[in-house]
Length: 315
Image (tube, rainbow, N blue to C red; front, side, top):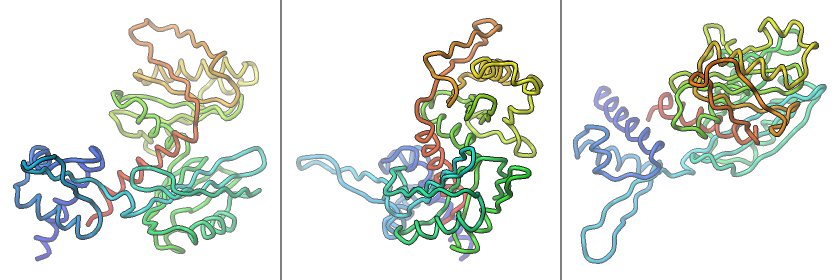
């Protein structure tokens, strides 16, 4: 019995992944993409309709045979997205309730002079009081993020994963803010598999998210993209903000050979950013200035949540 239910759960997971990618599909397309039999697909679809996870509607006019279209129920579960931003002497916690299509239903911002358990959990508790059907928490945070812990040596070490699981019994995924933006940026260039995204929050501070083969690359210790460790950063004060950004982009191009490099800077405007690179044109990436970092982070939070729901939250 357990094995049969495991197979049925696996069938639902396969169909779920297609629905998240295509938004709407038919029985014929599901048979083509999954290789499952008509009966197995119908059983899985009926189970998902009964649970409220998907919806169906008939299409076509006249007296001919109607086609059933299947789509996600965007409100079957909601996502709690948290974007933590750092200023010189304060932190902002932006809480967002998102549906399964990534639409922000409501949001709340709280500012604190500390990035610690008490202000973070107080803000999240207040926000969750007004939310419904929240099933997963995704946090985009500054600092090095691994195993649910966001850390910046000497400043903070926050076990956000444990805080959320112990207080609200919700699965929690923590990712670095620039990595999250890189995942979101990938949605803007869907034809690209290898890219980097550079964030310059101030003249001499940098972070980078790296996508290889369509997936985030963290490195073995979750420190990939720590551009502050490049040799020329030891003498960063000798350069202008624009020169440092060019050196970072040149270094990334030389090492990774990405198809695209996106960047967002609070110290350099797109109108003044020209990046002459020394390599032959055939090896130069397309360089794209992002206009809205928050939009990319929100896209990244949604993408991380959906990937987790598809591959981790079985049912």
